[in-house]
Image 1 (cartoon, rainbow, N blue to C red):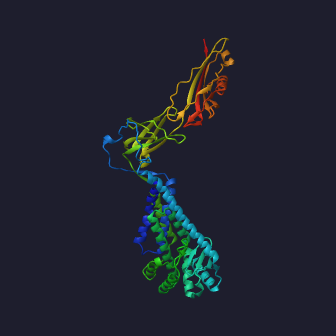
Image 2: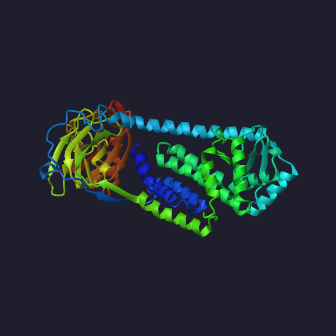
Image 3: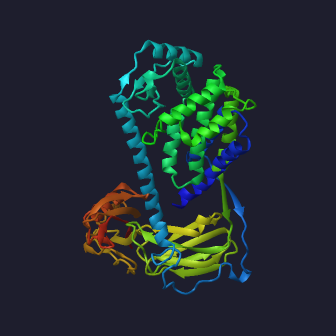
Length: 532
């Protein structure tokens, strides 16, 4: 959820810039303002993929420095109480768990509303009748040619007396109310000019994409404002397109008022673009009656300039990482490979001046080093049965002060010496028992239940040769040796074969990690020497 909030703050840069442009320069062409708002919403959505694809640039933001004596304060005591910043008893823990659930629920509700609106729109369209009247089709063809629209367009007369809207991408549909056949030719031309202007500008595609993004960022007030202004700018841009066709503004305003009286906005059809929306009617009429306003369509060069401007704004917003450079409390948790926490692990922190400080994980696997300033450090941890850990890291951004460490299971080792005389006689071999291993944490090391001693090869004894064989043996979950690999490069094959054949016959009790059997690697060293 922290990442989601961070992205929301970053997207506010693009959205805020577009809303400021729309508010301050509202006398500019509506087509230009619509383009700015649409590109800004797209740039806000592009923050996430850009932040994942592009390398991050970190900028440290200094905070009030703590007293030097408080920086990296030694923590020699064991941490017996839960860390208040991360445990379930923390007052911040519950919101951090609930917030992602709230966001997911809100996204699901908003997305479901869009799907329901789209389904109702399709159902209403299928129930309507295709308009084949020559007057309508002739005017539609004439307006489409003037706008450069070559796609097929369906005129659908619905059963609703109030629905007047346009929707669709590949084959757009103009939904007409049930009383549309009674309209005059002037009203038919005005309505079709407005609706086909939406189609020529691809407004439905842009608005639906914006609504989908708003469903994801439903908690972001600037996204709601941008989508509302985007719809308003689209309507005004289409009004400008109608006026550019030579239709007088007073006549257009009169028809629009009458349509608003007869046709309500398509509230239940949120994915459609209604023509007569009473919520924006007054603003639109004032704009169309103002002869000083710019009504020109946006050029390709201007659209490209807008896109490049917001790209130049989105890229730095995505890659810059501002973070406090300390000091703050350094802590974290230690886990084993099964994901279980590991209490009782001793942690050592060493700074650039080789000054060391220690802490011990508590019952929940948490450790804490107190207030630590930014810089490079070495973290070391050890526990019998696990591989020793040495981790170099740098504290730069806020998330670096919370560490998550996984300690892998350690490997076992056994050393065997096989002796024989240089002359014929009984083969003598000595095998020291394995060194005692202290078991700590949640691991139980295996115990050998079947031992087979290597036999000195007769060929090597006759030749008076000696050798040392180093091997890696894998002890399976059933305690049997499932694999042996000779790692010595300068050993005679007869020695390697004799040692490997003996080790393959060994049997152990299973190695248990948190009560579950796991595979473990044992390093075996077999020494063949001849007594004088």
